[in-house]
Length: 323
Image (cartoon, rainbow, N blue to C red; front, side, top):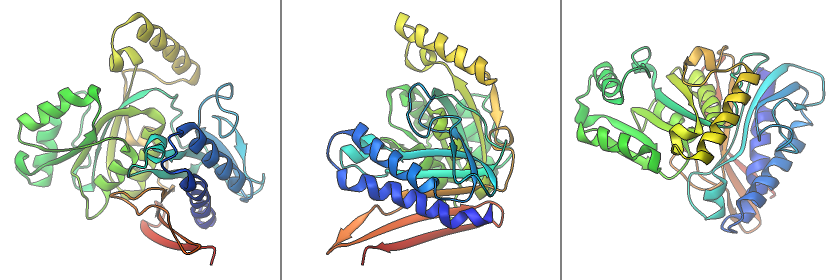
């Protein structure tokens, strides 16, 4: 795995560099396509036997980086790959902050196989490991985390997504005096910011994409934090309409075929079964976690976060391209 750290850095850089020129174009599908193509091309030059576990979707919905796709040269380490070519395609399309090109490597068989559906996620840093329990209400978890950190609830900082499905949770946390930071998108970045040593937030609680949840779990594992997650069906997240119920039925069929369960709490050790993980993110647009791509007089700068779970290192790498 150690031999893959530098190639991983180069892969996320290439995805970010491919997407960056289209910042503000308004077409998120175009941005995603450019990043996917660049990322796959870079991956196929790496000496590894990789298989995409978390990717762009099933083979009938994604021509590249689909779940189950084999990538790499076919020699070298065998690895599970979790990938989000651009976390925040809408943000890049609209010229907004916090977009990342993200990827994680783990030993073969280590990563949870999650279909593209909603997932409830609760993340804390190392100091609050072992105290969270998604079977309990949010207010109970907030009290547990505050107690573990030795803080009053009024000093606790919770990050979530500013989505209608989260408004009730935001109101509940604020009623307890908790400080709530609601981001438009980007729960992978929020999870990393929660688990870093000089953490911006004390916990991350949201309902977002399951693929992003598994990628977040890789970073949480490498940083020594804790996480629990629960797959929830579309009707639970969006509403009990006939259309939502039909989508939910399809999701349940996909979960059954992948051997995973809806409304079951998964621990961090079930999401990522090995600590020897590599997590990498390159900024596309400026954000709280990383600077985005910047171009000046023909020179392009990128900033990348590389976390190695095996040797417990966390590196910020500034790269200059094209001088």
